Length: 512
Image 1 (cartoon, rainbow, N blue to C red):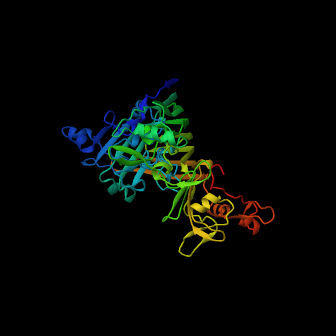
Image 2 (image 1 turned 90 degrees about the horizontal axis):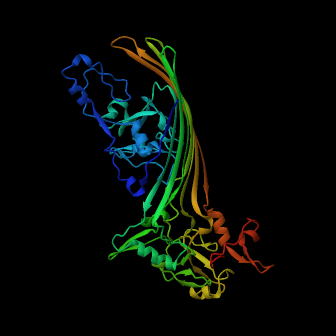
Image 3 (image 1 turned 135 degrees about the horizontal axis):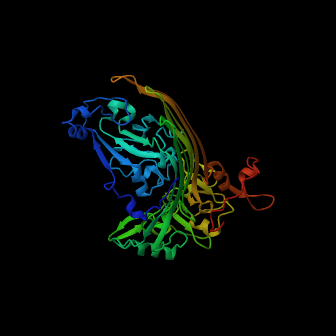
């Protein structure tokens, strides 16, 4: 039994994005190999461009093949394969654990920034299926990192060999082939960051100043933070055939990563609004809390603690949406599978790849709200102008005076009100992926070889979207009148028998 326990090195979150793979990236040039062996041509049998079945004894290519080994994965201590691949200079940011707004839940690779759909991903030279019904690019979450022997990346000229799927290039994951024994691999890691940013204008002082007047939305993070805790456990079991003609390797793994929020870092604790002279400013959204009420012309108000309209000032009242955005999505993954091959004869080798993964993650962005689009009291003209009735029982006398609202009339009003009570908008995504490959290959003679395979892949996707407003229900909750029987505020839709469950949404006073 071989037992390996590895601990991830402590990485500063501010350094991760800038680390290059100079320490462990090993580019392998096909023409370099050919040149080295030029004086010994009898030792060169063939040269294979990664993953392809085109073997040419005298091939010389100018396309570099970059190689990353399984040892590099262990040394870096990454629990996600895409984190290692994305650090290659050829790879650009694509779908990964850092994407929250617009996340598909998959992990993809985009070579030369030409798009994930134009990057071909292979396992032992066999194509991976679609990552999900929402994304046709291969999902790297399905790849067990412990099984990876090396990763080969080919960019220039790849489409000439593989077709239009490889316009950007090819990433080929070569799996361990003849593993024997038992290997247990465990990793644990986290990000550590010192919040000591002291740039132009001293951003920390700006945040601290905003926190003094608006503590619910602004808070200076601790000087020293530990975030993004990750843990992973894998087990590998392999056995060779008694006559060494084949091997079967089984793997199983579990991985869990914690969330990282924008509020954890001083440079994202507020939504930056650019610079004012030599000082940074904290910007934000006009869809604010406790709200903005405006006609986009003569007035713009918000609500104070007493429920009165006061002038809205962007520098004071804009909503700070940065803290609740996920910098790293929390996720959980289970993997299970088997790789095997057996030489039936000298000319027939049968092989199989069986893979299963269950992956779940949650993406979160700032809370939803009424983004000035839903009308305030059921009145909207053909040009889209929104109005509110001056008879709305939720409006106080002070508020009516502020907007020059007389009984029986209606005035123009658009409402931007953030739903902080409901929490951040969340996409709860889960995938179950299956992949099976069965094939046979071998050499018929010195000139001819064959590789016949059949492949099946399936990805099942489930998503639950939480904490978002229904436009229809929001409009009904804002369309409020006085109940002629009880004298209490009531939704017009209730009196009309349209929606008996409607409850008035009192956004005209704090805590309403």
